[in-house]
Length: 330
Image 1 (tube, rainbow, N blue to C red):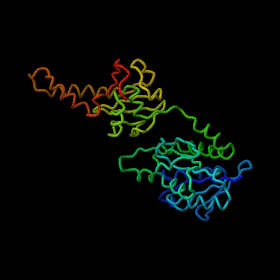
Image 2 (image 1 turned 60 degrees about the vertical axis):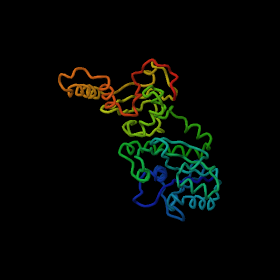
Image 3 (image 1 turned 90 degrees about the vertical axis):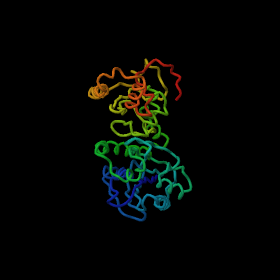
Image 4 (image 1 turned 45 degrees about the vertical axis):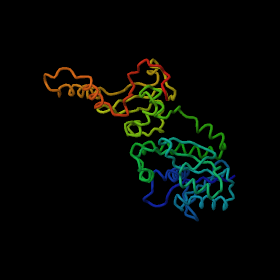
């Protein structure tokens, strides 16, 4: 039986090993591990792999991303491969780097390659292996991000992630879509970062937590995070409340708010001592700068001082973990 495995990407040396070309990278790794080589042909470069009686045709389209459907349709017709035996390997901004998800159908999620494939084939019911590339870019920076190269940390993790992607492709051809989805999509529990921070009582409402993300105050393992980013056990969440950056290690990925007494089961405060020293120095300097002989601050002066130290969206910063009613609005 024949299978068509398509890795999406753009041709040209300037696009080599960019995030948008992760589909090419997966197929290149599979070809190298299988001791086969690609040859140029119509609509793309192909390589043929024999796997336990199954014939895999690996395709890297030469049409550029936005016209990927032309290559997919041509090779399906050329090799007489049914739609259910087609697998598209594609980059996905919605998934953290290295996360792999196998789906049998779905929307294009704004991806131009998937959009053209669906338009050309007349259906969205084709299998795709989504390879997470993350979304750590500032507002308006999406194009530069997807066309940019992976950072050093990602490249260190890349060989293992590419190997896992290869195993998923092989399983798709040998065990079938449904069985492979069951094994592939089993994962460590994850939670949206805005929901998790609310659930762990770092913020009093999810809205405030999401706003902190949007304003660049939240990072996950050192990378700035948007509200939709997910966390899993072992991740370290940094919360910047000038002048201090607090750090919390995720112990449980939850999205339902817990009582104050259960917070230690959900997260561990791993803020470094130097951050608390910085906070103490800031408080001290606030009093040192007061004119001699003026006495204690008035209530108004205290409110002004609190506003100075507390960003407008962190008025409900909540990790004193008081024993308030757990029915706060999400």
